[in-house]
Length: 283
Image (cartoon, rainbow, N blue to C red):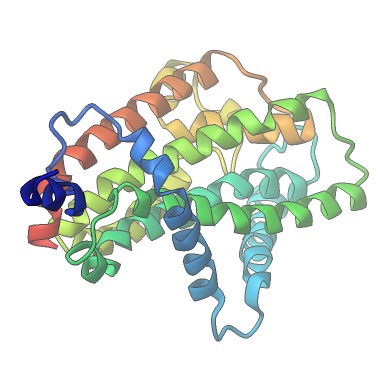
């Protein structure tokens, strides 16, 4: 073997990193290869969230619990909003579970690109790992707050029904919605830094446009189709039904919301992939 052939064999492999060729192709294989990095990002987000806090993970319970108390007093005891035969604390907490997860995940995903700009400009990894990890880390808070809901159901003697088997489906819809919206906002926030100031107002407006403080049955029939275009409508109504057995089972409203969730997720993935080629330059 000649010296030149030996040098070729001993030279290290070269990996050429290029921007995504087609924005509609999702690098699933590459994300799987970087699964340990995604796990690291998730664990880091959880530790940073509760580092040097007074009550730690208890915030995952206090926030929905205190919001539930306010809703139960003002919308329930004072305004007498229909609760579908459920105690007001159960009625509101069952809706706040997916809502709090969605709101926190969207706000976290919005800032993830800007917060990790130094990593993005120095090391290569699939940029999708950042918003995905932000959305996945919120599931820890969801799990903690869900334990509180189980205790509340035992206190109010509300027994689960076979509808509970549907809960993973609606949880997956909540994750997909948060990821789809988070992908849009994280890419936009990397270019226009004032997006993060709009998000809290957007989330607050979205709360009252969703059936959290009231059942969707109060919406007039002529507006139901338009109302169901809100992807969180089907998620919240589905959660309330699957956890308590009361409310609206999966039907036209949930199906329309599920279709919107799928569209938002696909569009968000496409937009993020398209903007990934320039994010490192503008972030």
